[in-house]
Image 1: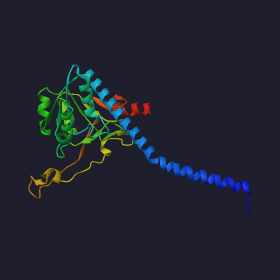
Image 2: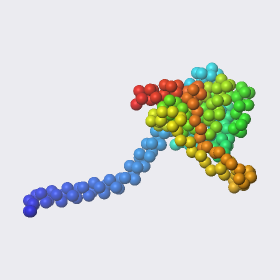
Image 3: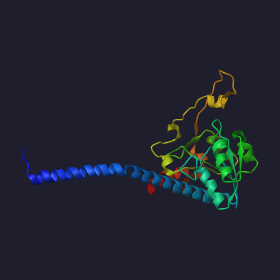
Image 4: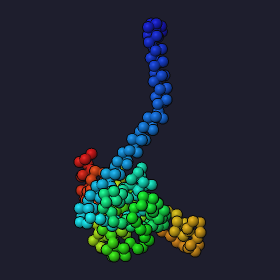
Length: 263
């Protein structure tokens, strides 16, 4: 089949343009990827700041004090997010507003994210703070030194049940007994409406060496049986303060409808 010269000429031109467009798209790809990453970074920091500010405002309203003592767990700050943090972001907002009296934080055994990571952040920023053993939390609450408890979340189910670092459930139970508001701070993306309840969340179990050894040195006899879940699930009814997101603070029972309404 013979083609008109004009068609061949236009065909070559189109082919040349197409090749150039493809080449140009590849040339600009790195800069576009970087731009998208920077946009995601800025959004995450903005969302975390909103979480911090919403949480701080709600705690001030519920606790009826000018300066608050907060207990937190694990690491939920700049080292766990793109910047500012979730639960530790609430602490930062209280500090920024002049409403933080003191931040207590658990060591968070066995991986010690509190004593290794949170400690680094609060000491670096000179946030008034104290590290405690996980097992000291009940005594601290009983002493009257805790006004509110705030932790992060790895997953929030549709009914408000929340999976987070092991030890979170324990804090929520203790908070209920001592009539201390218990909060979860997490971005809306952590809320998974496809999961009906905490019973559907699979809990990872970690290596026994995290319990039986410290920095390569064995502290338990060989043959010691271990149970080392990485997370636990806090029932929604124990989250008495609310679930703090970048869109506001919600009661667990209201979370699904609120997020759906806001899109």
